[in-house]
Length: 239
Image 1 (cartoon, rainbow, N blue to C red):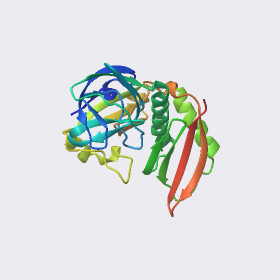
Image 2: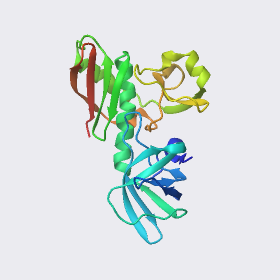
Image 3: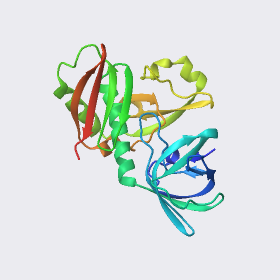
Image 4: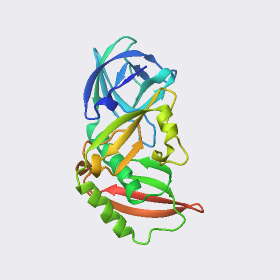
C-alpha cells in the first residue's frame, strides 16, 4: 500500500518516495505520496518528480489496485525505474486552494442543514448539491452566515471511529448517495470547532486547512435547480 502522507500532514510540500512500479497506463506507483489521489469530489494533486537523471511533471494522482497511489505524468517521457528514489514536489498553491474550498464546503453544509446529494471541489470554486425542494429565501443571508463561520477561525481537526461506530450512528453522514468507505476497520472524521464551539463533524478523506480563518472570504455565486428536488449551490474564493 501507499502511505498517504497528505493525510497525516496536508501542509507537506516535498517528500522522498520509492517507485514500486508502473501501471499499464504509465502511472508511477510510489510507496508514499504527498499527492492526494482523486476522490470524494476532490481532484488529484499536481507537481513534479525528480530522480537521478530525470524529472517529470505530475498532472494528477489516482487510486490504483491494492491501496496504492499512481502519479500520472503530464506528458510522455522517460519514467523512473522500479526501485528508484524520487523527490516529490507539490503544486502547493493549487493544493492549498483545494483545501480552502473543501473546508468551506463543509461549512456550507452547516449553514444549509439539508442532505447532500453530490459535490465537487476546484481551485477557484466548489459546489454542493442539496435535497432542497424550494430555493433559499435569502441567498445573501446564507453568504453572510457562511463568512461569519469562517471568520470565527475555528480549529479543523480529525478523529477516527470504527466501522461499527459509524454504522451505529449514520446521522453523521451528510451525503445521501455515497457512504464513506468501510472495510479497513476505521473511518476518518473531520471536526470543525472544539467542545461547545463545534459546528460540524462528518466522515471525509480529503485535505483541509488547519483553521477556518485560512479559507478567507467566499462568495455564494449561483443556486441552480437540478431535478425535481435537487439544487446546486456554488461558492467561490474571493481571492
